[in-house]
Image (tube, rainbow, N blue to C red):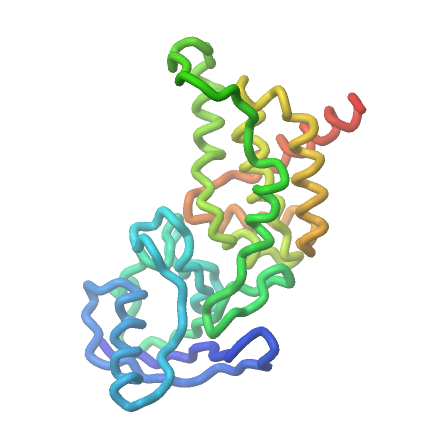
Length: 247
């Protein structure tokens, strides 16, 4: 299959950036989206041109580093699918694809399709952990957890921190990401000890890093490759109100 690509090229965060047209020729329907970009880059290198810079690591849909916006949709047109797991059979011969980086005030462009996600890591560093006693590993059955709570915590823990929710939100909000991290720990007894301080410091850090507020557009849930539900944002609000009431 043959495709026309318009790829965002930007040298660094200070460069204005622009869309550049490329032709992707004789692309197999069986290759992934990133493999298609690899093929295009091979052609650019042979011509002595600068290859397209993009992030990737696992290429198995579990790390989120591959995040790109394809035709206006974070991670592309397939629901619950990361770009690295998006295959070219989901496109048609002759299609025109616009490929851009995740766009948000808190995501400065490093180069081309690579953005700096340090702001998300800062949120985790501020409180996304639990304090435990060092020493021997406790018995896994020593702390009883209801299956409903364990399942809900696991649903929240599926978040891979890719940033698609932020890129899709018109406000550039990290609320779904933060809510997933807060909810995951708040639903487990090990995380309840610091639940009050955690939700406060992580929410404050989220705002400090320049993320916007949630205004219920639900775009975050729509593009999340792991299907994280917006109900976790409601959980974050409840935890926040509870924490502020106990201060």
